[in-house]
View (tube, rainbow, N blue to C red):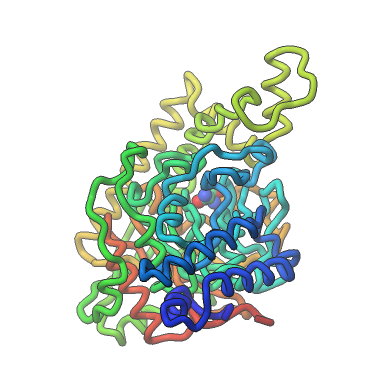
Length: 483
Ligand code: GLN
């Protein structure tokens, strides 16, 4: 049961091999027995899950089922859920119960899927290792003392440990793709604006995008079918028709033009990871693809540009957490200033404070032109690199991360070293493009992710390119040792 994909569970449910109540109860029992090891959930909503499962079983019996009906999944604790705590991994929101559901949650509810609970994450989605959570670090099921990647590390660890068949995540600079790479999963960061951000707690609004984390590309397509679409409540949502992401999964790849950016095979890349990526590219050649070396010359600038723009937007977004309207408030403040200072000082963790300081500085008078404006100009150059490259090739491939999962604590003392982990993922968010990560090998027993990047709104094509690889290889079928 726990090794089944969402696609397989959906078939079993339809055939009556098991009920949603049975699957849901099994997952809840498993979470209860095993999650102490991983710390992948912040909140488990057992009672609500069983109610939703019952409703799903009724819908299935009445012939009102869609693919996701009755399937239990987990949601990153960044999506507002009515009546259940939404913490964003922060002490600041430890007591926050949203009065409404995020659009994404509403969509899963409308499909009658089941929510098992809310997953652990780096505080306000700031991080690359899931060590920045108020609720403690998450452990990668692939190695007891290894990080699962961040910031959607709880969602990835939950799926990799088979504590949920699929999950939602968000990706501001790599937080869907990077944890997928480190835990042998398939995930897609859609084009900016494809999935509604309404009710998704904001980190950097011009970069944030939600997407699925799954065992296979096919499951990612099933989940994206529920999530994608225009939302009038999100002013940056794309008013464009949504494809059926499952419709062309099996389209042959003959003639596919793949670009390999030379900057993605830079000195930072672990040579053993590079070998796995090259082997995956060979597999694509065998499937009929043509390979072309390309250049994205401004790739190295994506880290400095992102680490100005994202903190700048974060400093503005996080100013709402003042201890007045909601969130943590300090004990017995002496005056208003004391309340602001202590509420924010106590409520935010170290990395969030670092970002607020950097962002406020970059936006301040006298420094705005030198930092924020410059970073926006570089952002434009990075986007132009991609636009040029995607005129010549259909998709771009490379590694998702420079190395496999590192050890917990290995990089926490040096934030810049941690930021280097994002070298291959950030540029895509700056450009607003869609990107996937799929399993493509093991190095020292740890998973390696292949990144696949496409043009704006090319999600259907990316999922097809990923699915065909998974029809020809078995990397995605590897599970963490002991499972
Ligand atoms: N690692 C990046 C950061 O810390 C990206 C995080 C994300 O995508 N949410 O900002």
